[in-house]
Image (cartoon, rainbow, N blue to C red; front, side):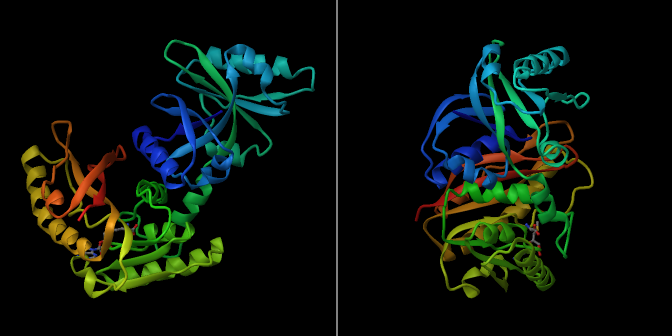
Amino acid sequence: MYAVIFGKNPRLSEAEFYAFIRRFNLRVRIIEASRNWVVFESSKKIEHLFRRLGGSLKLVRIVGEGETAIKELEYARFFTVSLYGREDWKLWRRLGSGIKRAFKAEGPSKFFKPARVYSMPSELILKGFPEVGDFVFLFREDGSFLVGETIRITDPFELKKLDVERPVQRPMLSIPPRLARIMVNLTEVPQGNFLDPFCGIGTIVQEFVLQGLNAYGSDSNPKAVHGAKENLKWLKKEFRTKRSARFEVCDARKLKKCFRVKFDAIVTEPYLGEPLKHNPSKGEAVGMANRLDRFYFSVFDSFSDVIKRKGVVVFVFPAYRLRGGGIYRKDRKWLEKLGFEVLGRYTDFEERHRLVRDIHVLGYRV
Ligand SMILES: C[S@@+](CC[C@H](N)C(=O)[O-])C[C@H]1O[C@@H](n2cnc3c(N)ncnc32)[C@H](O)[C@@H]1O
């Protein structure tokens, strides 16, 4: 039995997890789910594939339920304890001491207690103590809990490297590599031709290449395309990828002029409007969304020229954090008219941002 611990946007991580299961045809039986984790039975394949999830933190092997399950944990000379669903310092120490006592017969062990952290971040597990065990307690609302051990973590250093070490960077405009990975999984398309028609410096195309997909990118700005090519050269060297990507300078409203192939999936974060200087009123937000919609309509019209039947589009529309609180998300009836059915919709934002990403998963049904 396994558990996956979701990342900082649990709803999006959960959606990615279920899409991922379908994408890789994993046989999974869900046992229980909560806001921040899901417990399931599955084949060992999940252990190999786990690193390809962008939005989850840890893969945990569940050993049992309640305090008696502590006896089932495998001895580790150094260990730490992660609590999910409870923030209780005393409880945290008590469970750690319980593990130490249980290990005594096998040898001495040391319990790391980083100050005021109830769950061990992946960075620490990877960096500080490669030998350390991370024992996990998943608390249900009624106070009962499952016990397990972390067996895989998503590598935050790899994601960071993909972002900040590449030769060409545009911090304000680029999408985080973590989100690029999530969006590719949301397509549920395991293989085929993938396009990012607003590729910028190529973050999403990098992810296509890392995943061994047929990668295509385009942007109307030749400088961005040049940057994307430079970044791809770096990626090939640093990550030893065999595949490459094809880039074109192309207006996303005229894709059929630039590409002969048809795409199984289009994954993109387009132009999202001018940067916001303040949080808009509802009226201002509606105005901005309507002005951009004319552009997005032409873009989707162009998608219908180059996408395969039953192809999938994962697209970021802008939504807005309003001055008076709340978020404005526009509904776009014209998508259906062009043949794009909305299969899923998820928001993603950082606290400091005024713009919210309104991620749509769309199936082409014509
Ligand atoms: C938000 S950025 C994409 C960033 C990209 N995901 C990355 O990580 O670098 C939007 C991109 O759209 C491009 N763009 C704007 N209008 C376009 C159009 N009509 N056709 C194609 N690209 C366009 C811009 O040059 C810019 O690079």
